[in-house]
Length: 288
View (tube, rainbow, N blue to C red):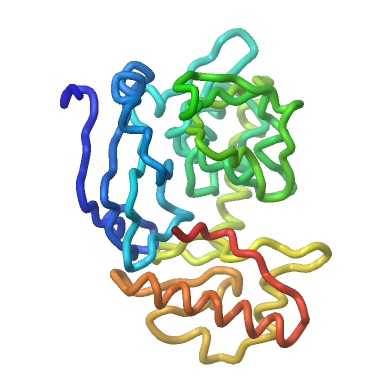
């Protein structure tokens, strides 16, 4: 392996990059900056336990740690290109950056991404969305690395089964790029909509705290926050791990708290809601 091409960290403390400032050690973390870099180190990808990580806003490593290889993309995977009527967006591009890029180029439709804290790769994995829009609505195709065949492949959105909070979650793959629709719009209107979404986020969601975004998916015909609020007493809104007083489907936690304590808190909420409403909540936070 050429050290100029890749950086490997051993026993990496995930709490350093986690939005929750919590999490166990990752036995090996490697950063790839381009396709050549990835292909030159393809033998490393033969390990059984592999997880791609993005902005670490929706991921938590248990206290016992992750015994495997975590892959973080950077460099060319954090860039955006326009080719004719298609936007080619790297998996490591931040959602907010992509939204601002589109505004600067008078491209409409991506205003909703301005308030999502993840990356494009994470969004494609989760089919993230808000304000009635989802990433699948604008996606044309996905370029991904197939670990088994050690090759780059492309699949059209028409051939993929995206649904609510379920995107491209195929095993033994690494999402590299997304190809997106390019539709020009009025720059003033685009900026105005971004500002509306941003104000709503500040008014209704916790800010400048350790937070992973929504804890749970909305069950069919229900709002998760309403189920939670009606199932729990005020004690859940206090302490080192606590529900947000702004929004009951968000929690805040003190930094460097045990990941297992966070997980226990989430499981308790699930149990309380199921006891009260006979509904099982499905979490958005990915726990490894």
